[in-house]
Length: 177
Image 1 (cartoon, rainbow, N blue to C red):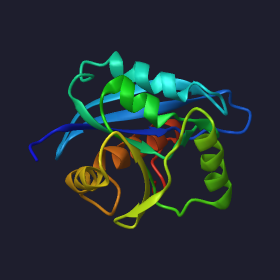
Image 2 (image 1 turned 90 degrees about the vertical axis):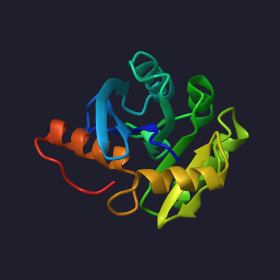
Image 3 (image 1 turned 45 degrees about the vertical axis):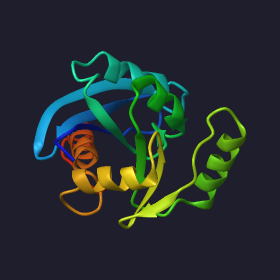
């Protein structure tokens, strides 16, 4: 697979009482960071999907991103992302990745979403991380994950988005995705 562009997106930390948090996106080709994007979303709101689409569409990389990595299906608390809408709007597969096994609460939320308009896909384990995806085959999704993973089991653009988001908004990066 030739060197394609991906974006990894994670939210910034926030404190109880905050109304908004930032979403950080890192544009990446294997071994090269090409850009950083940001936008704000409401904590526990319902604007994450549209804000992610707008953030990517307004960037100079919008037509060149071939895969979108998200840190989970929720941002800013329970601001739930419609990955099908993102995939269709941006014509790219969307891959949600979490290190921790999804909790029963999150699984129930996903089941609820499947019955509603978002039709959230089930979780799969790939390379010791938990994945939800849309927009391509599981075989292709595994190829994208492997292409963009340098350290550990998380794709590099997602790892970098996490480091930048936590470092900028808390003064130093901490924790793993």
